[in-house]
Length: 398
Image 1 (cartoon, rainbow, N blue to C red):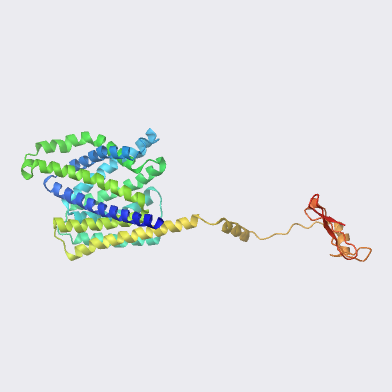
Image 2 (cartoon, one colour; image 1 turned 90 degrees about the vertical axis):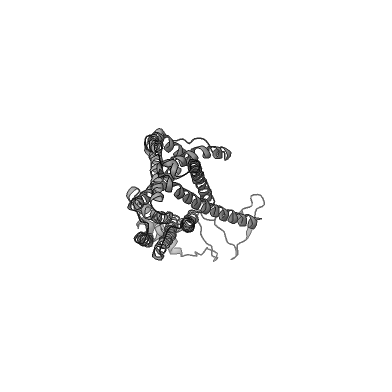
């Protein structure tokens, strides 16, 4: 029964990963197709936030996740609201990068997220990494550099937007973990909360920026059928919410290392499917650079996992080892000598270890029970006769 449950768990995780790869790849392809004729990345981001705010509520009620967490208003102003701001800005930059450069190149640049995570963790949280972790960043940097040099559809704005979105998502990951640890809020509830806050904060901004531009864009209806544009917008928002839901579900069922490896594999699937469906021109060095960066991400995940395991082993030291270490560090010191000890024990020293009685037999002299020793056993005719009293079940002498 346990083996069947384990097999079913593996099958479920594999199916979830396949669904995650397909949904993410489809979301990126739909987003690229939409932005080619609809150059309004802020509007695409707002539609995604609307989908998070509207679709998450029934799922949270179905999962019976509690409605609120005990979060103070000062914590909202200090952590939650900046986190929602970062989510919106990172999403906008992500859509700008997909709009300006091919999806494959945008996700190759996003493979630099471990680099941003290490740097930001060092600056903000004073976290130090091992040499192995630092060396794992080298193939990531080299791979992205090769892909950038050999990219046929290179655009500087697209590169900057991809780097900014990667930095924003790295900050979001760092502080999301902090919020989950500090407040104990459910991860899907946090996603819903950030989506709603970002939506309400930037809806007025969108009205006076993209909203006015869309209504004044006379060529919008000519470039594509408006119903097709609306369909792509809704499909992109729904796929984005669905991939977030599947990603959190996978994270609930697997370890962080497995999730990180699955995330890197997802990036490979996005790059491959986008190359096949969108058919953007690439060269062999470009492909080599892309996959070198992905391999570097896998190496970073393994190095990070080994570092975390070493920290756990260093913390969980057995108590016996601690005690023995303390004994080794403190040498044995005998009690101080006192002259009265000699005078108090002269008689015992004169009689020797086995003093003789007047009848020639030997007996071991003992102190009283008050000193923690057994009572004296008398001897008779060179033999000790012991009787067990049935009344008190103790050893007596005869």
